[in-house]
Length: 352
Image (tube, rainbow, N blue to C red; front, side):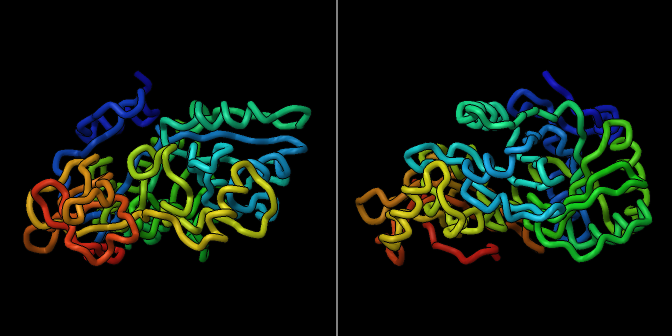
């Protein structure tokens, strides 16, 4: 089973490891709730080396990739990025990715750990005479995530570099650190990702924890990140988004560009837009009663009205609150909703 280049550091920090799509990743570092509060009040340091990273490069890379995904590619400037879907011919979501433009003819795609093979296969099948090369770059780069309200200050103290104002997925290469700094977040909090070599990542891990100790920086695992993600209402591919979903159902309109021209699955996306709505919508819920498991059907009266995809207890200053994410048919909004023995109430985001 593959292990992160930071495995030795994770062992020292007493990480509790779990299997994740063929990788061993830190589920927590002893207790999830303190890690959650680090993300909300200080900063959480994460090992994201298991995530998928695909390099797309070549003379035709801008045109080719632009015609494969739902968002703008050719118009991205070097140092910019965006979030996009890769669709099948029927408009269903095969994968999602964060796309970074590194050079005029080079892009890096970040995705969930189970998706590189899916993305590579889908892209490769459409390369005919295009001058494009695809590379799985997971083995070449480690990735640290630093997220939370004190993330910028902790990064500055650890590296001596004060990040400029950056939009989501803006990025720059830091020569002194031999690292690429990306404005990114999986938790919904302010965050930065650091892509660098394995040896350099281990050194930065130590520096960030040491420099950020007075700011409340702690190593955090997957479980605390998931709770923050659910609170923020950020869907995760493979859990909240699958190949059964159409793009507009997910509510992630930031992944769609309606003026870019043709791309794979674009006809279906445009047809949905012209009709004005989809039958169901990604929705957050407050839960009263037992926490519904993923896959639990949502009932409005005696009719099926949707399905739960993710659920969790969200820590509060005192106690906790049960919440869930899922899909709800639009005609059921405002009705009495149940999932198993629990009552559901649609909630605004972020969940409070």
